Image (cartoon, rainbow, N blue to C red; front, side):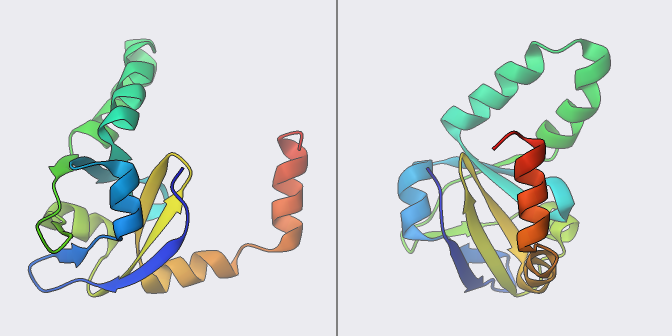
Length: 139
């Protein structure tokens, strides 16, 4: 289970120190791809295979857009000896990553956010909106 949030600086080449705790859960290699809300999703190879399997089982008419969104822009990354990963430029552009980023563990995947946008998104979360969402899901 991926949990916690971590703030790191990204260098001009797009390298960022990926949190050791999350690296332990994700494995030696993992996938970074487009995510919702203009962040990046990070999947272990196992979770990536589960996502791919789910999409393969959908009718083509329903799955094509999702496959293009997640798979066409995906990149396999491997942390270097310092624990840094290189985020490809097309992914940095999509997520608006410039320097300070937030990496958050979100259950079965991690997310990479521009720290300013992460703060804005979290300001929108209120106890009432969370309670409403929990009610809708039957919690």
